[in-house]
Length: 135
Figure 1 (spheres, rainbow, N blue to C red):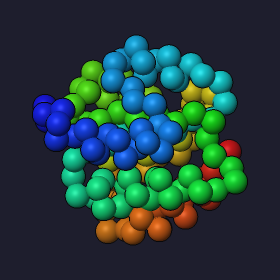
Figure 2: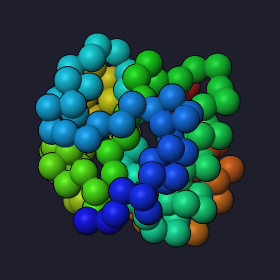
Figure 3: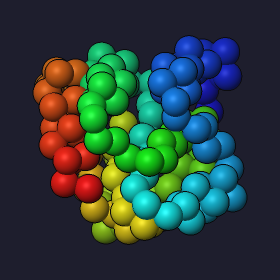
C-alpha cells in the first residue's frame, strides 16, 4: 500500500477532471449499477500512468461525446475496490493502469497497460475519443 500523501496528487488529477473516486467495493458496485455509459480508470503510481494514461484520459474528455459516468480506483491503495472493479473487466487479466468502458454495466472496451506503454497522451486521447463515438 502506498502512503496517501504520495498518491493524493495522482488521485486529484482524475478527481479534478470529474472522476468519482471509488474507494470501496460497495462504491464500485453502486457505480456499475448506473444505467448508460461509464468509464473506470484503474489508476497507478507507475510512470506510464503519470506520463500518458492520466493525461490522455483527461485530454479525451475534450470531446463532444463522453461516457455519462466517470470513476476511478487506485491500484496499490484501494485494494478491495480495485479487485471489485477487475471483476467487471474479466476475462482480461489484472492490469494497471487500465481504462475500462462500459455500457449498462457491460464491458465494451478495455485498454490494458501494454496498450498504454510507449504511446503518447495524444494517442490515448484519440483512441478513447473513437471509443466514445461508438457508444
